[in-house]
Amino acid sequence: MSNPVNDWNEIWKSQMLRSREFDPSQDCAQIWKSRERAKKFWETSQEDRERINWTIKGTDIRSDSRVLDIGAGPGTLAIPFAQKVAHVTAVEPADGMINILREEITEYGIENISVVQKRWEDVSVKSDLQPPYDVVIASFSLSMPDIREAILKMQTASSRHIYIYWFAGETSWDVRNRELWSILHGKDYQIAPKSDLLFCVLYQMGIYPDITTFGLKHKMRFSSIEEAVNYLRPQYQVTTDQQELILKDYLDRNLVEEDGSLILKNNSIRVKISWDIDADKKQAVRNLA
Image (cartoon, rainbow, N blue to C red):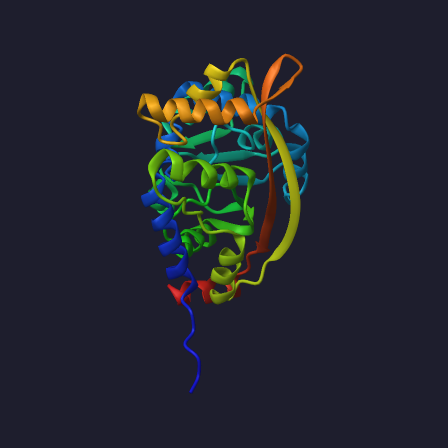
């Protein structure tokens, strides 16, 4: 008797659903509603120019390329892409991120970015976008509940390349969430699906991508413990005075003083997953739909 074949997309759906049920902040459109939090995200990202430059250089673009950036945030990649290519479409659902993205577009005097404020799962390739795109990129923005459907849509929009970045293994914030969640909420934290499951979904779709694994460290800077608590309150779903005291005590023990700031150190193992599009592959993937 043959062994049953796992439907890896259904496993992804199940893990993502459990993660969102236990932690609503996995919904990025909600956690980044605040302009102030989005601005802090932008400022932190700008301290890591090496990672941004590495990502841009690792993408096959030309001056006449058209790029689709899914989950563009405040423009961390969309803005430097726009300085090198013909056009960028930035898809981003969160109000706070959109506000900062538009501000930075004005600040940099950029005229070749179009913005679509929607979740990727709600985007219509035909109605909302201007395909085909030479490059489709989703950088740490894979909170989609149906990852197979999300990838099919990426395939439809792309004419040349797809680049996905996601996490491998437990991150430092996963560790913090696991330590804090049971104290704050009386239940275990549920980690979102990682790149191993993503690869299985792709493999089952007949997509055999190139994979690069790399480590990344970055720092979040705060001027005070109060600023750190205010910034992290939505992430940890802190709503009571007692929960705030727990979070403050935890941060007091884990923040490090450095150059007049309080630092929260983050580290993670990350994966770049990429593949090229051709007509035969595209039709084969469509046939799976």
